[in-house]
Image (tube, rainbow, N blue to C red; front, side):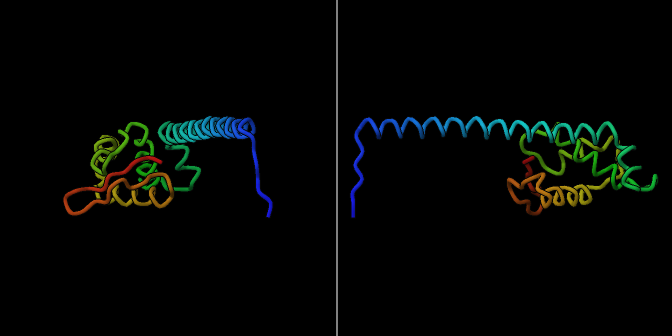
Amino acid sequence: MGSFSFSDTDLQLRIDRLKAINEDLKVLLSEKEHVQLEIRALEAARSILLPKTASKISGLNEGSNYGKVKEAIEGSFMVMPDQFTVRDVENSIKTRFPKTDRPSISSYLKQFTLDGVLEIVKEGSGPNPAIYRVK
């Protein structure tokens, strides 16, 4: 078997190149995360600004609040702190949808978690609600 031999200069050049690649990757990841945040913000703004249009397009009947409540919950993510609970979302939407109960909101949050929009920071148990974060 042959052995590899590099001079100190060769090793330093390789190390410098790896550092440069690492910095390029950091910038690219940062740009990707920024674009993902912009997309989420635009989608949430659309759901707040166009709820009637969205419900008509999706074929929901005018008496149904399902699509409207879901959009209001999704839109509330824009104003939530980094970590939030079902109670925070309930307080955010209760003026528009006062009859929406906490278990229903919790079901929506679970669905958003399954869809990859939210992640659970801490599981809930008993009187302690789950803590969520927008991905």
